[in-house]
Image (cartoon, rainbow, N blue to C red; front, side, top):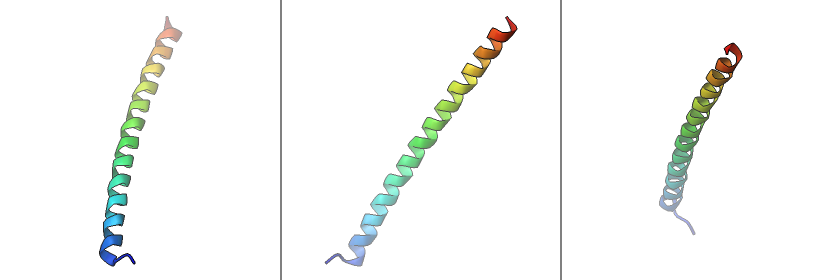
Amino acid sequence: METVENKLEEVKQLLFRLENDIRETTDSLRNINKSIDQLDKFSYAMKIS
């Protein structure tokens, strides 16, 4: 039978993993936004040339 301490430790580990996943997702979204911005600049440059 699991104790409350074991359950709390499990929840702590899950939250830590979730925090890391959120951080990685945020970084990925930031990189995607940078790529979109570069593409927009390129597209605009092609239109005016």
